[in-house]
Image 1 (cartoon, rainbow, N blue to C red):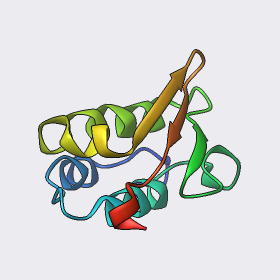
Image 2: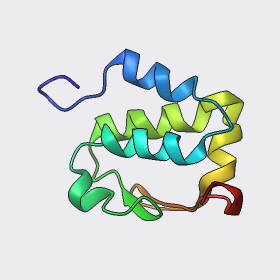
Image 3: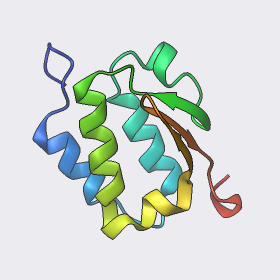
Length: 94
Protein backbone atom coordinates (compact mmCIF):
# COMPACT_ATOMS: atom_id res chain seq x y z
CA UNK A 1 0.00 0.00 0.00
CA UNK A 2 1.37 3.45 -0.83
CA UNK A 3 2.37 5.72 2.02
CA UNK A 4 -0.75 7.87 1.59
CA UNK A 5 -2.97 4.92 2.55
CA UNK A 6 -4.76 4.57 -0.78
CA UNK A 7 -4.95 1.04 -2.19
CA UNK A 8 -2.99 0.45 -5.38
CA UNK A 9 -4.70 -0.61 -8.59
CA UNK A 10 -2.94 -3.97 -8.19
CA UNK A 11 -4.50 -4.44 -4.74
CA UNK A 12 -7.94 -3.53 -6.05
CA UNK A 13 -7.56 -5.86 -9.00
CA UNK A 14 -6.54 -8.67 -6.66
CA UNK A 15 -9.84 -8.13 -4.78
CA UNK A 16 -11.82 -8.14 -8.02
CA UNK A 17 -10.21 -11.39 -9.24
CA UNK A 18 -10.43 -13.34 -5.95
CA UNK A 19 -11.73 -16.92 -6.10
CA UNK A 20 -15.37 -17.34 -5.09
CA UNK A 21 -14.25 -20.40 -3.13
CA UNK A 22 -12.42 -18.28 -0.53
CA UNK A 23 -14.72 -15.65 1.02
CA UNK A 24 -12.77 -15.69 4.31
CA UNK A 25 -9.43 -15.00 2.61
CA UNK A 26 -11.10 -12.30 0.52
CA UNK A 27 -12.45 -10.48 3.58
CA UNK A 28 -9.10 -10.87 5.36
CA UNK A 29 -7.29 -9.37 2.38
CA UNK A 30 -9.75 -6.46 2.11
CA UNK A 31 -9.34 -5.80 5.82
CA UNK A 32 -5.53 -5.89 5.48
CA UNK A 33 -5.52 -3.03 2.96
CA UNK A 34 -8.23 -1.02 4.76
CA UNK A 35 -7.03 2.37 6.05
CA UNK A 36 -7.77 2.82 9.78
CA UNK A 37 -8.85 -0.82 10.11
CA UNK A 38 -8.31 -0.79 13.88
CA UNK A 39 -11.50 1.27 14.29
CA UNK A 40 -13.13 1.06 10.85
CA UNK A 41 -12.93 -2.72 10.50
CA UNK A 42 -11.91 -4.11 13.91
CA UNK A 43 -13.46 -7.60 13.44
CA UNK A 44 -13.54 -9.73 10.30
CA UNK A 45 -17.29 -10.21 10.60
CA UNK A 46 -19.61 -7.47 11.70
CA UNK A 47 -19.77 -3.74 11.21
CA UNK A 48 -17.29 -2.01 8.94
CA UNK A 49 -17.02 1.72 8.31
CA UNK A 50 -15.24 3.51 5.49
CA UNK A 51 -14.82 6.55 7.75
CA UNK A 52 -15.46 8.67 4.68
CA UNK A 53 -11.97 7.75 3.42
CA UNK A 54 -12.08 7.59 -0.38
CA UNK A 55 -9.47 4.81 -0.46
CA UNK A 56 -11.79 2.63 1.62
CA UNK A 57 -14.65 3.52 -0.72
CA UNK A 58 -12.45 2.28 -3.59
CA UNK A 59 -12.04 -1.03 -1.74
CA UNK A 60 -15.81 -1.36 -1.29
CA UNK A 61 -16.35 -0.64 -4.99
CA UNK A 62 -13.81 -3.33 -5.94
CA UNK A 63 -15.47 -5.76 -3.53
CA UNK A 64 -18.90 -5.13 -5.04
CA UNK A 65 -17.64 -6.12 -8.48
CA UNK A 66 -15.41 -9.03 -7.39
CA UNK A 67 -16.06 -12.22 -9.32
CA UNK A 68 -19.10 -10.59 -10.91
CA UNK A 69 -20.53 -9.70 -7.51
CA UNK A 70 -20.72 -13.29 -6.29
CA UNK A 71 -18.33 -12.82 -3.35
CA UNK A 72 -20.07 -9.61 -2.31
CA UNK A 73 -23.44 -11.37 -2.16
CA UNK A 74 -21.94 -14.24 -0.16
CA UNK A 75 -20.77 -11.98 2.68
CA UNK A 76 -22.72 -8.70 2.50
CA UNK A 77 -25.57 -8.38 5.00
CA UNK A 78 -26.41 -4.70 5.22
CA UNK A 79 -25.43 -1.19 4.17
CA UNK A 80 -26.32 1.92 6.14
CA UNK A 81 -26.00 5.55 5.25
CA UNK A 82 -22.61 7.02 6.01
CA UNK A 83 -20.43 4.20 4.69
CA UNK A 84 -21.37 1.48 7.16
CA UNK A 85 -21.41 -2.16 6.03
CA UNK A 86 -22.06 -5.43 7.80
CA UNK A 87 -20.40 -8.64 6.60
CA UNK A 88 -20.98 -12.25 7.65
CA UNK A 89 -19.17 -15.31 6.31
CA UNK A 90 -21.29 -18.12 4.90
CA UNK A 91 -21.43 -21.07 7.32
CA UNK A 92 -19.30 -23.23 5.02
CA UNK A 93 -16.47 -20.65 5.20
CA UNK A 94 -16.30 -20.34 8.99
